[in-house]
Length: 176
Image (cartoon, rainbow, N blue to C red; front, side, top):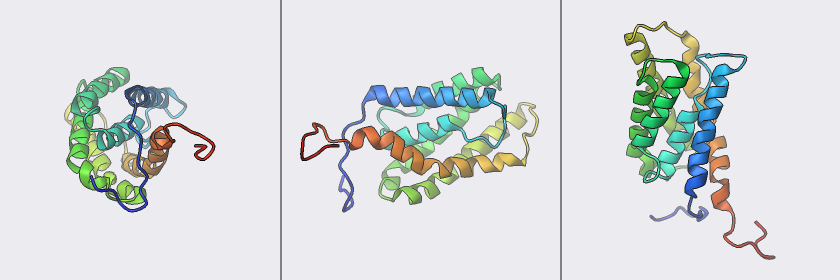
């Protein structure tokens, strides 16, 4: 792939870091659900954010199967309709794979604007499945979650790409 001028060449991502970050995002989602705000509809889905990030940056390591499995874990944790999160994460992962080559050509703020429709579609599908299963409408604050997830995209890019930006063997001339 031809790189943009000024773009840094990244080290390969370590599988242990990828799966550790996915597990951390899953635990953070579980913590959000048990926190003082409970299961608020406006809270960003950190697992969806990290899944999309790794699906875009490492589509051969994290894909639709991982998204489905993580979605089932979220369904079991929340006591939701089994397959609700699994279906939305699977569709989200599919859409991320569909745009991953084009998305990497843009700057990080432009990427955030382009992943917003993916997050909105995932939340819309999740709402549709919840309502079709006889669940209650969570409120209009649900519309805030995709905006928060897109706003967190630059933070996720900085944090999750940090281990790949270091020099392979630091010395006096390359202290990072």
